[in-house]
Length: 288
Figure 1: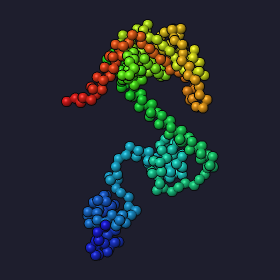
Figure 2: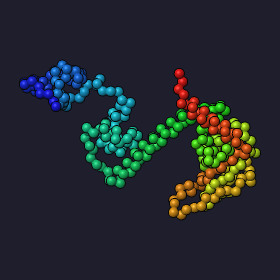
Figure 3: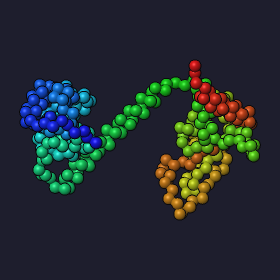
């Protein structure tokens, strides 16, 4: 509940307003004026300072100040939000905030022309976002640098535990078996096997692919990636096509999944599992 003020405290409103305006134009902030005039009612203070802009020093610095000023200039020249967006490459929501106190220009274009301008503005925004997205990825990629064999080993353990076949207490399968459709993931897995000292002769490969795709081309692709002859591949596993489902992986880049089997790998599997739990335990321990 707002407290009542002493009778007559703000009786001379016009006189109080003159003092408040003079203080504002002298560069005082709202808080300073409130304290100087002993005005503890925000509604009254707003009325006293109505129409008086704040002094420049009270405004917080903003990285978009230059864009804001340019947007206001263009708006005063009669530019629309769409035109300003195309010119400056900033969002319409920001433009709206920057120029909402300025007069609205008269419509001089047809609906079709305005729509075309809006599309171009959106394309500029999308392009800027994509550039920012790619820049972030590039910086992160370059920050990694070269990996040591130990780093490759640890990263490979995490990858295998997420994607590889695992042993179960009710079904002992202590062997390395890995399947994935991403060529980069398969390349890294093969590099991990190199670090473990596994020769290519100990590997067996099989393609798993939809029956409507070209299994032979897929085998040739994966064989080239693995550095082996396509003839060494086991017979491909063909997945039945269900006409009731809409399969999206139908492009020319679709090559199914590659399954990699490692022969005589029980000891390697145990090392992998042990290292995984070592990673879990090591991450849980906080350094002193």
